[in-house]
Length: 444
Picture 1 (cartoon, rainbow, N blue to C red):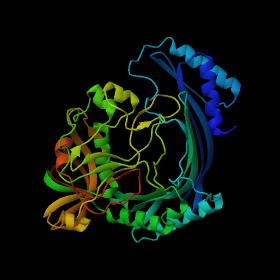
Picture 2: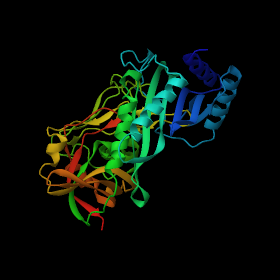
Picture 3: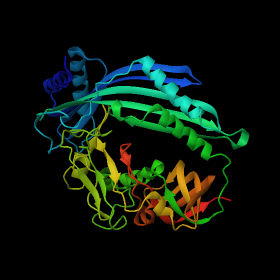
Picture 4: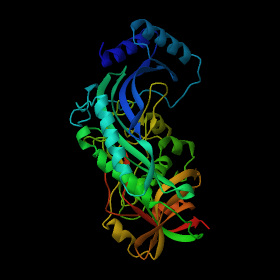
């Protein structure tokens, strides 16, 4: 039975048992991974999983169930259970299938999300060893946490009783290395990681390992900066976290609950003039690209912020109804619950200055390369996180620093962001180096 046939069979069962409307999702995951430490395999894994979720509506009442058993008898039992559950739960006047869902059959044609390359275990182990050896070859590296390589495939099918049916598969390849440098109490660790949809786009094991080693060595013998106010630059390794906070603040579900510090900000200036934030589910070979969202709505490019001005919330159909708006195709879901708004391939557009130019006029500042912990109040925007990185002195990178806390308020931080030109698309959320002046630093 094909993936769409599983979904069709479950939808038919829901209809037989009295559902007014229903949607169903099928997800199959297959993966292989290998880890080596000091050249010796320490983890060889292969996993396969399959799950199917059903959501039924009876009037304004809804219920969700899931299973990993794929046969008609189980589908019938599951649909009967869901329809019975839907009779006893409270009504949700904002629930229901998406009114803007597409009609017909859809796939991921043109997005190039499926790779034919499937390395065997010997190849995975060999690539992991290459990465680890390159990291250990960096002068100053003293130990290793290991290197890991993996690949996998996810197959997704989604259908609704209103006539939408879609399916696609996505592949993924990954490589990472983690090592330690220095001795005793001065020992530091760091890592490098890369993942892609297609194997041919993955960084070479040697470059990933070498980068991990160089990063670890650069952190040896860190000091703590004096407590004070500093101009701060977020390295691309961590600058995407600022976009993550922005996404949380403009999530339609949070806006509907009134739990965001940006709840009154629609149409106002929330970022520096000239800044654009775009979500692009149509990015070819994108790590989070998709042809449709979790409710069967079209997945189109969406500018969240243009010239610093907030243009839209992130909306699925439920949050859109709560706010008397229309969904913008940002629903995401698994098999065991209802959809919720989320982004796909998100990025902050780059600026005009290189990373070096961005820091050239900073007499004393901090380059943040790692963030730890999180104390971010989404009601007020108050921000406080542990951090480490490097001092900036007269525009040049200087000694490593650690055990500092960086604090501010996101509303103010957003309006002071200055991006560099070093944007690269390596993750589902991407940002260039970002400079924010006047941040509070707690150190010595």
